[in-house]
Image 1 (cartoon, one colour):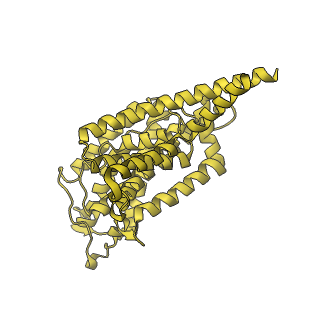
Image 2 (tube, helix red, strand yellow; image 1 turned 30 degrees about the horizontal axis):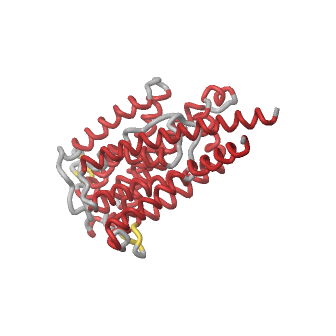
Image 3 (cartoon, helix red, strand yellow; image 1 turned 60 degrees about the vertical axis):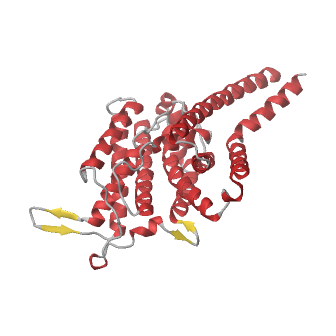
Length: 348
């Protein structure tokens, strides 16, 4: 009887661990049945891939933050701010009023500058959380509003349109971030590279072990010599770095920058991360799971749009998905604890 119960628990655990991939397969089958071959057409798959890459890159940074037991609500606003800053630098340059000149920069310089901006915003988040002792939710909620405000101030709420640069100024080429290479969106390549790097960091480098240790038991991590505050600051910088990439890719895809870009995308990033198995309580998570979670969110969003589901209902469904993911994660953790206790009792 005990063996049968143990086997059932093992089967349930296997299903729980593979839940995200199972859900992805079921979603693809469902939308294929509902929309027929249209859902599997090249144009639809390209559209889904674009969105998956954007949500996925955000989710990669969010994974590191959530593993440490934190949260980053500012990433969507960073997307909008970086888009406005990049678009402004290409369209208008930077005017030095005291010198009466306007400086224009090459695309590589703009990309590096925007990545630095993302990292700096992440560092500010990390410092507020660690040095000022502000809860991550409140700290990043504040920077979310600050970044969104600065995004609007950059152009007084106006949009930078037709962003392509000028040949004579040497700032063309930004659109490559939003184009396709061999039929695949550039964002997908960037997502793949960042995902591989994230796997290496989390699984192969000491920093990844420190991140897991801080999230698992911060007090023990500190006692073992891990500089927990430094680790937290860095993970928020990683999140800002990823958000900056998304801001530039999104702007390049649209050939335009709007202050409201990225609004609400932090929820997609959180949903993808939690669906992928990263625990909201910290201490556990995988990059592969996050990647699959990003595909689930992308397929859900685009599938519902194709089926004519209103944006209001889409928000309701996304909220339910997040709650369900957390409930399932808690169920898995409880089952793991129960199985561990059972195993100890059997070994006595």
